[in-house]
Amino acid sequence: MEKVLQGQIALITGSSSGIGAGVAKSLAEAGATVVVNYSSDKSKASADAVLKEITDAGGTGVVIQCDVSEEDQVSKLFADVIAKYGTIDILINNAGLQRDAKFHEMTLEEWNTVIKVNLTGQFLCAREAIREFLRRGPRPEVSAATGKIICMSSVHEVIPWAGHVNYAASKGGIKLMMQSLAQEYGPQGIRVNSICPGAIQTPINRGAWETPQALNSLMTLIPYNRIGQPSDIGNLAVFLASDLSDYITGASIFIDGGMTVFESFADNG
Ligand code: NAD
Figure 1 (cartoon, rainbow, N blue to C red):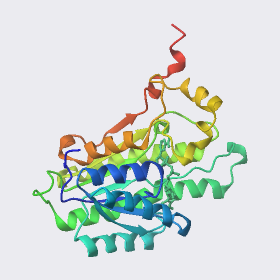
Figure 2 (cartoon, rainbow, N blue to C red; figure 1 turned 120 degrees about the vertical axis):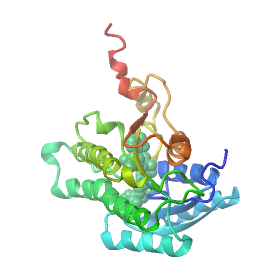
Figure 3 (cartoon, rainbow, N blue to C red; figure 1 turned 45 degrees about the vertical axis):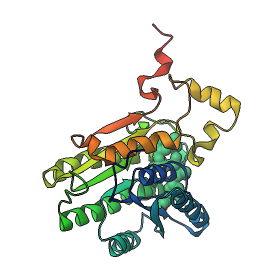
């Protein structure tokens, strides 16, 4: 891969597994120094394994623990990254989770947990990143933009999702947070965009792909007829983080094998 991110520092939240791990590997392959973030002790070994794969391939980075929903931990994460590397150029706001329930049975805890990690976590990290971008100003030697933020949203920022109202609400919130940030900080050279994945093969949606029956049922939603891989998202993240996309800000880019063209309408013509 061309080293389009050479000399840049990238933080990828929730990168001990799934999409975050794939994005960390792709950004490192493109030349970025990566911060692999994990939240709890049980994910440390996976985070270390992601970094080992990166360094074995010639990349550089570090592993740092932080629960993105806790303000003091997020402040410390950014302080540690800036102390180690001097600044940060790219934030991938990726950490997320699901707590599914029928809406009339959903507990306040299930609602709050999802909003706190998926939406408030993105707010806390974006705020720290923007503070740092404003403090340091442009770095034209590495990028045309002063800083880049990429929010991991979902097709569910536009497709309603029964049984997952907390998750869909969090992703809908990300859409307008992202666009409002792009509007507010465009004049300072900060680009903010969202990646909206469809079905990507990761632990978060294991039930949707781990049996042949589940996978067949999933394919009825995907015109392109395959499940996505973390590397698909990694390729898009490299593009959105690099100057190749320098005129893109405030955009939600769907990467879903066509899920948002609504396959189920194909036979109704
Ligand atoms: P995943 O479960 O493998 O990854 C989620 C990561 O977030 C995990 O590493 C987890 O430890 C981390 N995390 C959870 N809470 C955290 C916290 N408080 N602080 C820091 N990290 C925390 O699932 P994934 O599919 O890789 O999900 C990554 C992102 O992609 C999520 O935002 C998810 O909503 C989004 N997404 C996934 C799909 C898909 O099909 N897999 C589709 C659309 C959007």
